[in-house]
Amino acid sequence: TQLLEQSPQFLSIQEGENLTVYCNSSSVFSSLQWYRQEPGEGPVLLVTVVTGGEVKKLKRLTFQFGDARKDSSLHITAAQPGDTGLYLCAGGFSNYQLIWGAGTKLIIKP
Amino acid sequence: NAGVMQNPRHLVRRRGQEARLRCSPMKGHSHVYWYRQLPEEGLKFMVYLQKENIIDESGMPKERFSAEFPKEGPSILRIQQVVRGDSAAYFCASSINRDEAFFGQGTRLTVV
Image 1: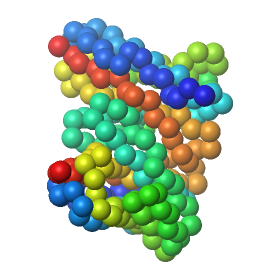
Image 2 (image 1 turned 60 degrees about the vertical axis):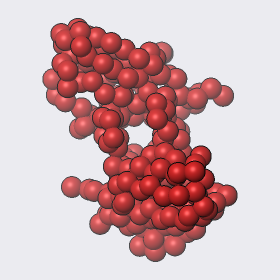
Image 3 (image 1 turned 180 degrees about the vertical axis):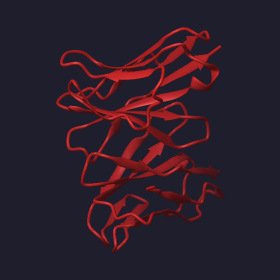
């Protein structure tokens, strides 16, 4: 069974703090995507990483793909209330399939 | 280029009725995925279709659920004889290259 574990499942922090969300698996992925979902909406793609060790930055968000392409992290610097949401990672294989993590629910308190 | 369109956004059905959920993928996208999401949970894969073909339906219950993606028109997820446990948000996503998926806003099904 292919699993993608996200941690923590829930995180509530104050505005201005930094945080890291992790996505781990025993499977090797051809790509890994991070999505953000707000209540009542569908997930929105934030970034795709494809190369082991790759780092991508999106303003205050930094995404890293593990060297072995089995894990990934999302780091948010100086979190803002607008960052509140459900963050989902999804691992892609060379075929069509995407394997999804259960998500990290993030709340940033003003 | 319009995004993935799902309708209806909200659907209420009585137990035993049929629910039909529609998904129009982004222009040029031939891959469609259906997911189900329960409150406070992540997405659960149901079925993957390409035009007129079901590629993988391993996540879809064998009974009462069916999906199609005809040559013309939207993809349809059909749930027959709905039960309370079918209440969930159903999301459709489409992709052009099999890796990156773009999601619709979902259909929230409530079975009463």
